[in-house]
Length: 284
Image (tube, rainbow, N blue to C red):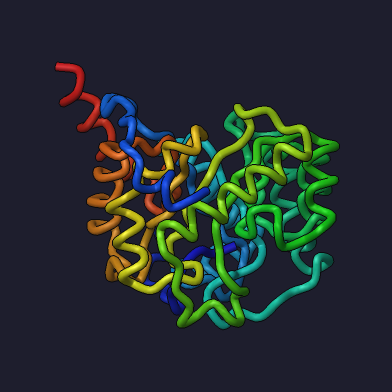
């Protein structure tokens, strides 16, 4: 499932309250280097790599390559969520992702994540070896998703989004609104009896947000530390960054200083090298 406020671009195939927001912030140590979640879209219409890995063997080879390049997690998505993307059925999504999940779960030692809003897809993927559910709706899109995560107890990425892929374009979301929305998703996850260690939050750059919203969220990223959960940042090749890996690296550097725990990227190799430099500089 693709992320963000973008159009299809195949050039990259190789690769709770206002008071809470305004309160003084507690910064995490800048020495913490975020883990890398590698993006693998099994779709014909994702904005950056649509169609590149729609073939099972190509997708398998790409996943193995990302693992070798230093990915800590592989995030597998079978439905594009770019603005204007067509909705597909759970059956079609499973047809796309399940063969790859089964093959990778028997091959790779790193965790697999399923990027889906559908409880049927999440349940089948978890049965086949996935350990993370990455839900762009923050458990709000499918009323049955809460029961699935309550049963399997996976790690869950709760993302903030506004609208649907068909309606999100042109919407706006303030930092305060994102904070409140994430707080609501956390309550749902807690209601599913998930422990704090299994909850990750994602402010959802590009999902029902203007270019200005995205920049404001990045500038105030450490505001979300007050929610006291690990933070994932997905800025890779977003249109407000010009869809460039170089600009993505700049945001990755910012994420280090602002306390992010994970970065979700297309270009794993360069991100790994980039973060190695940070780690060396912090520990000389």
